[in-house]
Length: 347
Image (cartoon, rainbow, N blue to C red; front, side, top):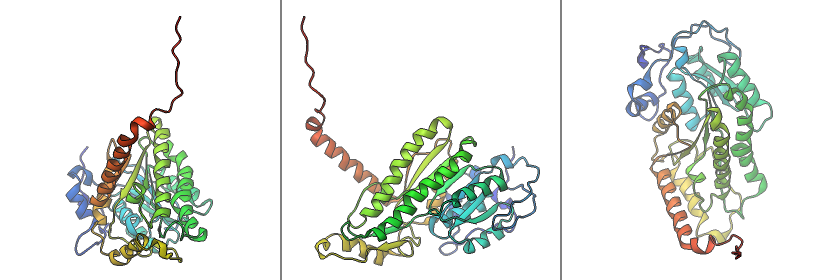
């Protein structure tokens, strides 16, 4: 089947501007092979109401079997917004979600045939089910769920108060669980479906001042590994994305700090607070390149379970593996000899 290059997308599909004159799509062109840029246009239906109205579906074209339908949480900013823009620009169908959809209307207006938006607070019962229903009603199913919504918290374990750190677990972990549970019936009906769970380099290894955030992301890692085993026989793949520092709003609007500061932790935790102040907006990671890697993983016939993105994430993973192996080797002979002693019976 002949495939048209991305330039055949309708004229309203303007790529998102990033740093300088760069765009998400320009980065994807550098990273992806040309076949990845095949057009996925072809729907001729009239646009639906942006806030969740369902369009009457037209007769599918030959291109339609190449399109994926995505549901992405946390599309108001950061990697979630960048990914939503790239998904829409390449011609896939998208249900973009955020707690408020006001900022998503321009995206819907640029892609009226293939993008819908709906309010989704992952901590609010029923929101995820309504978003999944929108994907199925507007586009006939769901192929990719991206659990991106989340935020961070800085503070020593002793410094954090429950009303400070528990809301983070409600979003980063429990919200992810409930969104996934709501989407699983739809995903199981689609051969080759994908679940992309946003973890972090902080989900690979713990660090002083980041313990609560580490814990929320470690839980995402364990849950995702178990889910991957449950879904593998059904043909559904789980991808754990573990980004390092990227130039998004994460260290700004998406990061909270403990109100209490205990002097006893002066040699460790303040460095984390200082890192936030001095690196916000200066992170080395290019979010457009992170999104391009994520798209390539989703499109892969054999996607990875763990996907560290960026040199810092890879360094964290390598350091963790080296430290783990060193501990195992140093204590193996002692720690492995723990089974009940066996006695040999003689005739």
